Image (tube, rainbow, N blue to C red; front, side, top):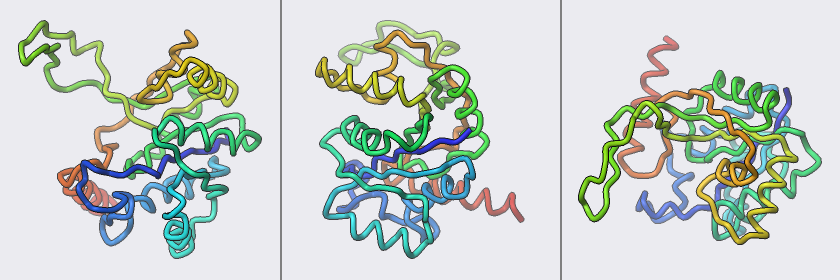
Length: 231
């Protein structure tokens, strides 16, 4: 099943404290953004990549694409102040490209191709599917630093990306959110508001988002582990 992928890449990365776009930081001498893009560049079912970017970073990103021979990027519309607006800009720009749209955090370079395939298949069958992993830690609801209750961990999942949707569903959800002035933390929240079931496909714990300096250390360890497995 063919799909396009949208990557919001216009964030500031304040928690990384890098002084620049965290996607330009390197893991094994390669930018985080390129690690992520290569996953989709190598997937034959991916027919196009759309990046939401800051206008002042467009030239730098294009130079990276050229250097690493990333050929599937079809457009780089300007990102909005919020992630939701950036994704919406890309979806509008790519409206006629494919019937299935994946939204993925550009700072998650370790998504497994097998998980992408399962997501695409599930979204094709149901209309909406997202990646996630089961919670491992004990979870508690806390107010003012005081425990209110212990939450049943068996029912809790930590949600990741990619998140895959039929184009008509995602666009309707985005339009409704815009009309209502609703701002969600991910696209599945927008789809949930339409009372459409969103299915969860089990991902891997390696699919971490590069958010802090500590995450970079984890990323280096994941790359080392994968290199050892290949050898």
